[in-house]
Image 1 (cartoon, rainbow, N blue to C red):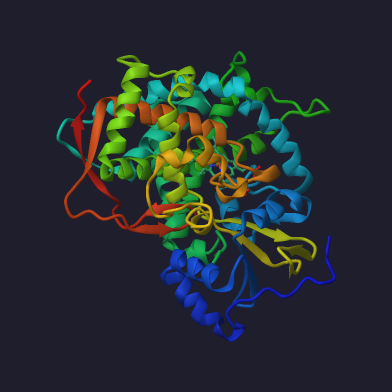
Image 2 (cartoon, rainbow, N blue to C red):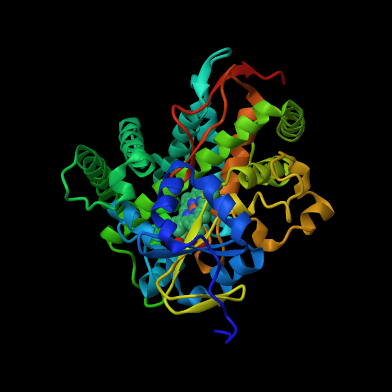
Length: 449
Ligand code: HEM
């Protein structure tokens, strides 16, 4: 695995560690970009005694995520998530992760995902009834509300009352705020330290816990059902063993968190881009009305909406909801001709690579047609990796793609969104790539059919 010629990767001198940290907290996206531009495809940064390697060539990203997957753990920062998710799929490792991945895959088979399509469109349609012609909305908040309702419905179906959904929404809001803005999350402060924020987030997690355990108990007592939770309750490993209540709780929480915030951001960014590119919005509206007309879109329709698919794909290129994917090698490993020592933190940044002019001419431009025909074929496989890659690739990637396509179709068939005057997009990279501050506001106009 290690070539004798492997060298030490270039990077800013180690004594700049503190300055790097200051730069990083001020402008994380800009700093990553500058490091890649200055030091190349494998760059080393020393921060507070820890070596980070920014890997930015598609072939090297493939090596980290796929070829060397056997000797890669998730990066150290994912432990913050354990407070909420316990040992769910996102935070688990080793044999326990492998077993869970196999069990969970049963709920994400293509046939299952197709069957969730009806709920995705129905819940979005119901969620849009609160929208009024001429009203203004906060894009991120509204998309978060809708994706939350979709995931809650697909995961738990009719097991949730409206009051339960509200409870989950409020608790998830607290968790998202904690992950996005808190020094407690950044410094990985233990949950038992009684800061006000820690207390709030512990209470929010306890509230969802109580709800999830109650639903699990009720569902175990009821007739089996074929929804997502039903599939997880019934899933058996090779020895015939099923998941314990504790494991089911961790997985349900993981699907809630991983499943709603990322898709909400993908949609919020897409609607922002449509508001600033009216010609793309018109073409998309024309495609959706031609294919779907006045009814609700189905999972089968999603295949007949290629332009919608390209719009979402291009939006996640420019604004990848997951803006870095991290790994920690458990052995020394050579990547792109450089030695990366065991215990280092490897970062592959979707933000950096998706805007690399070597793979994406006019990288800052919003051009959905770059994903059509021969132009798409010229893009290297790992120049675009919004869902990560290799054995730990997002298990919800097909779910998310279907969900985003159906939700977008329901929205653009009925509404046009226009950015309010004076609004400019600013980004806040936290666990996900969010809109900064209060987020963007748009005005709603009923679309002509
Ligand atoms: C646009 C939406 C989404 C994006 C951009 C996204 C992105 C990602 C990324 C980058 C990873 C990490 C991959 C890695 O470390 O290599 C991941 C993992 C994961 N995602 Fe997603 N995701 C999305 C939607 C979803 C949805 C809808 C669900 C579930 C319903 C989901 C569930 C998960 C889970 C459980 C994992 C952990 C997988 C594992 O480690 O085995 N995600 N996602």
